[in-house]
Each structure stands twice: as C-alpha cells, then as structure tokens.
Length: 437
Image (tube, rainbow, N blue to C red; front, side, top):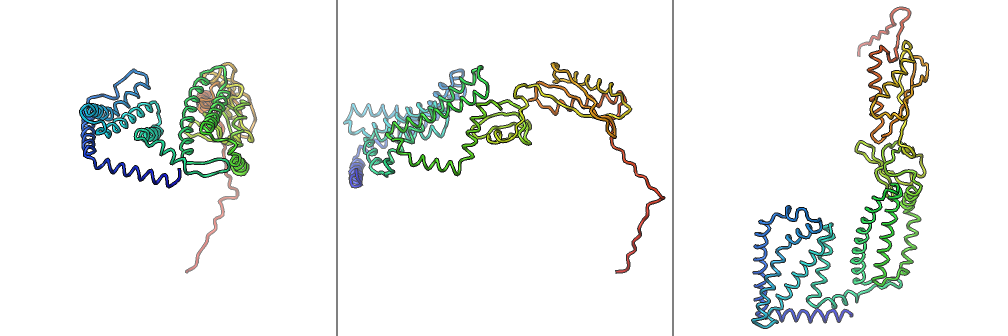
C-alpha cells in the first residue's frame, strides 16, 4: 500500500462518515447513547455509595478481591453496556437493524473495555495496566469498526531498511507489545522461582543469590529471543549493533562489566555473603544485599554503604564471620602501681564472665601488657557470638563494670600529672612602654 492508496481510503471513509451523520437515525442513536451514559453514571454513583468496597470480599483470595474491586470500579461501564444492549435488542425487533448500528458499535466497545479491565486486574502495576488497557482496547476498537486490517497495512507500508532488517512502525509496535508481555511473564516466573530457591535450606545465602541472578538473566535472554523469533527478526541482523555495543563496552562500560563479573565471582567463591559482618576500608557493617554491581553494607545507624563489587576483589576485606561467628573483643585499661595486678586480672575476668552477651564457650582472659611510666597496662579479651548486635556496646558495658569494681576496691586509674617548677624566684616580667602617638 502506497500513499495514494492511503489517501483514497481516508477519503472513502470520510465520505461514508459524512453520509451517516446526515441520516436522522444517527441523531436518535446519539441521543440514546447520551441518555444511557447519564443514567449509568447516576446509578453507578448510588451503588458505590451503598457498597463498602474495603470490607467486600474480606477473607477471599487476593486476586479475587482485586477482581471484585475492579468490577465495582467499572460498574458504570457494566450498566451502560446493559442499557445499550437492551435498547438495541428492542430496536432490532421493532425496526431495521441498520438503524441501530451505532448502538451495536457502542455496546461492543463498552464490552471490550470491560473485558480488558477485568483481564488486567491481575496486574499490580498501575502504569502497565493503563498501557495494556489502552493498547488492547485500541486494537479491539479497530477490529469492531472494521478498520484493523487497513490500519495494519498502513503501518506496514512505511519502512526503513537497516541492512537486511526492514524496520516498520508495525514491527516496532509488535516488538514493544510482545517484549513487554514476555518480560512481565519472565518477571512473574523469576519471582516464583526465587521464592522456591529462598525456601531451600540446603543452599547457602551466596549460592541462593547467584542462582537467582543467573535464573533472572536467563529468563530475560530467553524472553527476548522468543520475541525476536516470533516477530520474524533474524538475530544475525543485529551483528553490526552487537559489534558497536562491544566497542562501547570496551571503552565506556568496562567498570560496569568489571563489577558484574566481580559480583559473580564473589557469589561463586563465597568469600562474602549476605549477613556477614565486614570491614572494607573505613566502612564497617553487615552485608544486607548483594547486587550485580555493588553490595550494600548496613552500618547499623541508618546508613548503608554501596560498595562496588570490584573493590571487594582488589582491596583488603575483613570478614568477621567468614568461618566462625565468634568474635574476639579487646578492652585495654590501666591502673596505678599501688594496685595488685593479680587482683586486677581476677576482677576483670569475673566482670567479663558476668556481662551479658559474653560467650561462655571460651573463657575471658586478662594479661598484664606493659609497665608504663604512669602505671600498669592490662589487656582484657573475651568472645561474643552475636557480633551483629554490635561490639562497642558490650565493650562499654565491661568498662563501666570495671570502673565500678575499681571504685569499690580503691584501685585508681592513672592519669598524667604535670608539675611546673619556677627556679630563681618570680618569673621576669617585661614591661613595654609605648610613647605618644
């Protein structure tokens, strides 16, 4: 079909519409449609005021409740279609069918919109629902008025050749619609498989994340390949574009690809996994999520550090819970030389043993570390098996208990003392006398 054919078709359609508008029965049907629309809106308002939508279907399955709410929201369309269908049935039996063709078209359009809205009630994304509903209803409307094939031919008549690929508006629309549906189905399938993988207790968290990511990527690749094959696109036609993408990756996307590959390596070698307590540079916290480009480390104070996967491969990483969740906590303190070091060590061990969260599997230990100028330095070490709850707080509890015990035993903590001695009497004072001006 060329442009002349398109113009001829449009002129023919315009003449047909002009002839129909001049017919008296057109205005009769238009009045019936306006009256039916007004009555449907009024009745729908009364029904919505009497129906308690939130409590309706309470206890029913989620999809069924959503279906009922969409049906209540479209009650005006239901009433409009019912009134138009009833009036058309009466007119078909009392006059010529050609005198109610507009009512038949309106009934078909309203029914198609109602069916589409109910069919898309299972989709949770409002934007996707609107797009799917509008596209599906536009196709149904063109089919109802008998203009679907001419519209398809017109969209396929304009084309651009890209190598061996014939690119048309019809092809773009097909690819967009089919790809959206395929990716949506792939997302649903991915969520279902992810829930099954997460419930499998035989797999470690890192293996679960790796399987989920590989599974989602595989589903997306399969969905794209199926869509391309369904619309008749030969994937070899994209050889030029794939080469360009390869060059772009080599020059501009190397960091993204590096982080992606690094993420797969981290998931495969299990060096870090979700839930581990790690120190990366100056960042300390628990790994809350592992993504294809970065990991999220929760600091415990509301902050989350997003660290690229490549940094975990190239930099030093301290994993506090790599093979064992037990973590050693060290408390350094000092006393003066008047204290008995044996008593100090005994007090420190007893206090650490009685402190909550201190593990009893490995007993605490206190060592005399150094004889310093100001006093004796001690090192108290103990183990905890829940480092996720924090280490500074348990260290603080032990130090507070030590302070109370030292007060009771008259053990003093040394502090620096500075003495200033003045020899030869008073300090010389320089007097400055300023002249006038």
